[in-house]
Amino acid sequence: MNHKSKIEDMLLEMIQPKLTEIEERFSRGEGLTGEDVNTLLLKSQFNHINHLDLRLDEVVADVASLKTDFKQLENRFEGLENKLDGLENKFIGLESRLETKFNALESRLDTKFNALESRLDTKFDALESRIDAKIDSLIAQFNEFKMELRLEIQVAIHKSMKWSIGLLAFIITFLKALEMLLAK
Image (tube, rainbow, N blue to C red; front, side):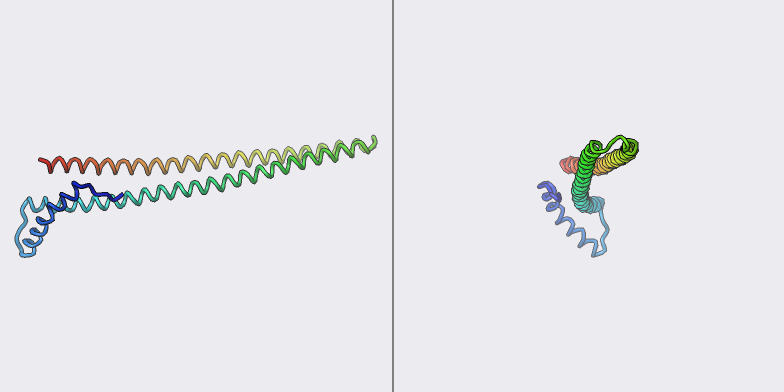
């Protein structure tokens, strides 16, 4: 940001000779008048505004960095989600292949192996249920974490924006008041 207005530049040019004169009188040991003190305070306020402007630039840079960090995290989570989708597809393919093999086995076996087939189906169904439950649990945990992360980032961005806007409003109000004061 760090943009000075033409009014600021004009005011600084107007008070610079007065500041030089005050410094010379002070170095000679002369006392300061109320007007001298006001001039020094005005210069101090200009310096303070410039300092606040630099701090605002830092806050803006920090917010931009947070946005970049959030985007990188979001990309990483999307990559993780894609990997989970790939695993889910592999499990679906595995399920399909197993069903095909079991159907072929069933057609070749006679009635003696029906009890064995029933036990295997039960075990595979239990395994499938546990895997589905684990996948559902992982997806739910991932979505919950993603929502918490988004909320935390939104709160941080909101807080930074409130401070930034408040600081800008203060600076603008101060400058307007100063301008009105100087116009009198």
